[in-house]
Picture 1 (cartoon, rainbow, N blue to C red):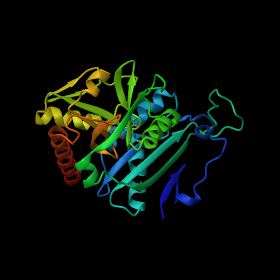
Picture 2 (cartoon, rainbow, N blue to C red; picture 1 turned 90 degrees about the horizontal axis):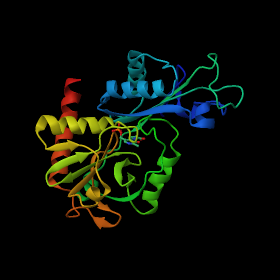
Picture 3 (cartoon, helix red, strand yellow; picture 1 turned 45 degrees about the horizontal axis):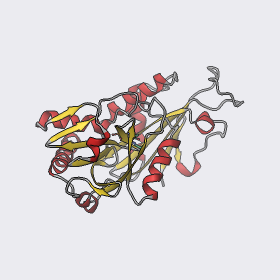
Picture 4 (tube, helix red, strand yellow; picture 1 turned 180 degrees about the vertical axis):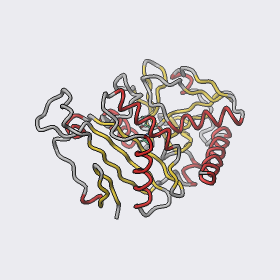
Amino acid sequence: MVTAFVNGQYLPLAEARVSPMDRGFLFGDGAYEVIPVYSRRPFRVDEHVARLASTLAAMRLNNPHTAQAWKAIIGEIVARNPWEDQSVYLQVTRGADSKRNHAFPGPEVQPTVFLMSEPLVTPGAEQLARGVAAVSAADIRWLRCDLKTVSMLANCLLRQHAIDNGCAETVLFRDSFLTEGAASSIFVCKDGVLLVPPKSHLMLPGITYDVVLELARSRGMWHEVREVLEAEVRSADELWMTSSTKEVLPITTLDGRPVGSGEPGPMGRQMYAWYQDFKLTVMRNG
Ligand code: PDD
């Protein structure tokens, strides 16, 4: 049985209810986070809670909980669910008004808070050994992709485009520049240098993106944070997708053509090893 949290109450997920008048349902008017949990310890939880706070502030939605209260709720959801490794999903919407109105409701309408958890399934040995296939597409999303909102139609269409083509991810280009994946950050390796676009309104500030850059910095992998041209992606030696659930996963074909040798490369293998090592250190030290 999966335990969920809805507006202050812990209950079985199957019994969780929200109103059809909820603005998350009617307008996609909400924020979310996905937090990986290893050995029952949430990974980078302060950073996830801080990113939620930034999304809510940009949405002009009062944060219903302090960082400390969020961490307590996340901890309780982890404790009440059966898996050692979990993926905690957290969502806040602008609540349920009595009428449908694009403009914000009054202060009497409280935000809806929902959390649930699923087993965390990170890429397996075979996927890591082979890498995954990706397709590319124009980034058709809006101009505030830095906000982690539940208005996800474009991301869903773009991820389904990958699935329809037998691929794992869609790599997005806007005006011939790399932005990110449909649900991941994208890193490029060329001539021994790790390249990634700088944070902007056009991409999500990934928590895994930050960990990867910290590891590159601290362990001495040559890297550049700068705009990356579509042509550089297409001539890359290695491509990786990174996210809280995929960790660091090599992309070995793009639009049916091999990336570099067509096999996972040495920089990706190195970063994957550093990431696993860092994860274990964090899990040991809390
Ligand atoms: N998605 N970019 C987009 C558009 C994403 O949806 C995600 C993550 C990322 C990577 O962010 P992070 O490293 O903080 O997980 C980048 C989550 C996992 C999801 O929607 O399920």
